[in-house]
Amino acid sequence: MVLDKIDKQILNTLQENGKTTNSKLSKIVGISAPATLERVKRLELAGVISHFTAILDPEKIGFSIMAIVNIGLSLSSLSSVAVIKEEFTALDEVIECYQIAGANDFILKVIAKDIKSYGEFMNMKLTQIEGIQVVKSSFVIDNVKDKKLLVLDLDEEYEV
Image (cartoon, rainbow, N blue to C red):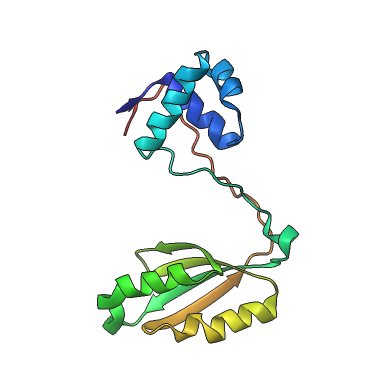
């Protein structure tokens, strides 16, 4: 499936505002509302649009601590990476998790209500996962850029 200019306009618009109505979206891209809806459904079925969601401001709902946690595994636990991934996935405090290549094995983005809650998370949950050898926490002072948009060039060809 190759994305045409209209598909890319739909994707750019929905990334900026997922609540854009189908009627407004059809006016933006210049095709009928039923045709627009059909394209959105096709993009969802193809997996280009994975889901729609609301993005919350953590501080406004009481989560004042955000940490970036670098995890190093012991060499003996490399065979159980799948189990470790499942354990990270099960932790509510972990809002993003990346397996990486380099000095560490994983990077976690963790939120907590306060430093005491973060300490409890570290001591009672994270460090209890078998195979973790190194945990290095860095605390976010300011969110300078948190862009979730993938801006699609209307003139570039994308094949999905």
